[in-house]
Every structure is written in structure tokens, then in C-alpha cells.
Image 1 (spheres, rainbow, N blue to C red):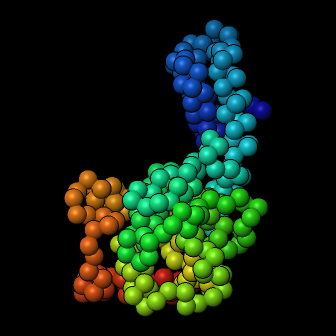
Image 2: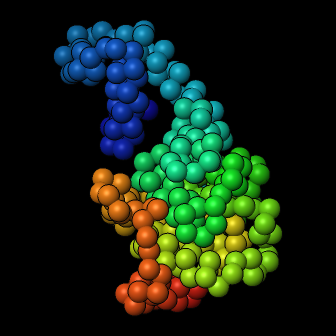
Image 3: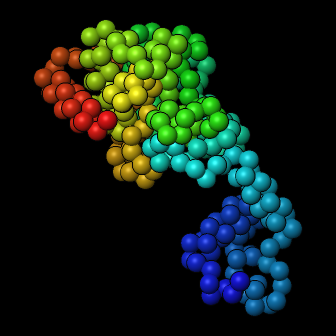
Length: 255
């Protein structure tokens, strides 16, 4: 293909792969990305970097699907396998960890699970599941968000899909409060047309600034005593109740 037909995005993507591979191989990327190397008529990419690129591409083929889950995040074939989804700790709970997408998604979902544990019902080991294989979820439903590491199911055996009424009124009140605290960045499957009361999932697209803002708010709480998950919460406080009810109306209307 004529180089003039290669898109800028393609060039940038290839450069990113090569640069990342160079760093992984312990070599300076500038050594072989400079125009001088090409002008000299030499292959500017050392064998070690070529091998690193090959391994990176193989890892991408093994991990990435190229297909989005219901909320727009890419599904991955494996967890803890070199992609973006890893088993992460849930401090203050007996959970062994949950497999979720690292970064802002992790911060938000781990906070949700911790608030559930402290404010709704104490969780036991095995009560929360995260990532599922893409082959184990229905891609047209929100449950597919499990395959992108952007969702969790809390006690799925207690809340069969399609059934209403798994929570007591005070527990529902706490769920609404948690969702409002997360500024609507997370949705509860109990509000979906295909009810799934065990399911909680990120409800914004990749790159949405709301997710980063909520995650940063949570990280700020972690640095202050008496803030964040585990801190006393007055669910009946007018401001909290009003925010929770307003979000409930918006999210139910979007079902």
C-alpha cells in the first residue's frame, strides 16, 4: 500500500505498539523512530523490539475481542491475562477480590461493593462475581457488561434474573443512595426491562468525564478520615433523598 494512503490513526496506532514494545524490551524508542534511521536505508527496528511487538500482538489476539459490551466497553476473553481486567481487592470485606477493569471503573465498582457490604448486608467470600467470558453472557443485554469488566453481580443466586422484590425497602433506599452518590455513573439491573437485581454496571461510555470525576471523588474520600465506604450515612437526609429520587426517575425512564 502506498504510504500516502495510510491514515494518521493507523500510523499512531503502529507507533504506539512499537514504542510500547521498545519500552518493554528496555530499548530507547527514539533510536528507531527517528527519520534519520529510515533515511539511512536501514531497518530501524531491532529484533528484540520486533519480538516484543509480535508478543504484544499475540496478547491482543488472545485477550481482546474487538466487540463492545452493552455499555460500549470492549469485551475481553480472559481476566488476569495481560489485558485491562484483573482481580482487584475489596478492602474491609472477606471477598477474595473481584475481576474488574482497572482504573476508574475499578474505583467505582469496588466502592459500590464496599458500601453494599457496610450499609445493606454483610458479604461473604464468593458473594460477588465480576468478569464473565463473552461466551457466557448474552451480548444484547446489560449482563454483557460483565465481559468488559464494567459490571458486578452481587449474590446472583439470591436474585434470579427476571424476578422483582429481592430487597427490603430500607435496602432499596440504600441502593438508591449509593447510585446517587456515584452521580449516575452506575446503573442497577433492577431498573432494566429484563430485571436483574444482582447486576450493577457502569452506565457511561469509555472516555465519559463523569466516570473520572466520580472515581477521583472516591479516591479523595479514601484520604480523609470518616469519608467514603464505611462512614456513617444518613439515608433520610433531605439532600440525599432528593438526589436519590431524582436519579431513580431518570434511570427508570431510560429503561
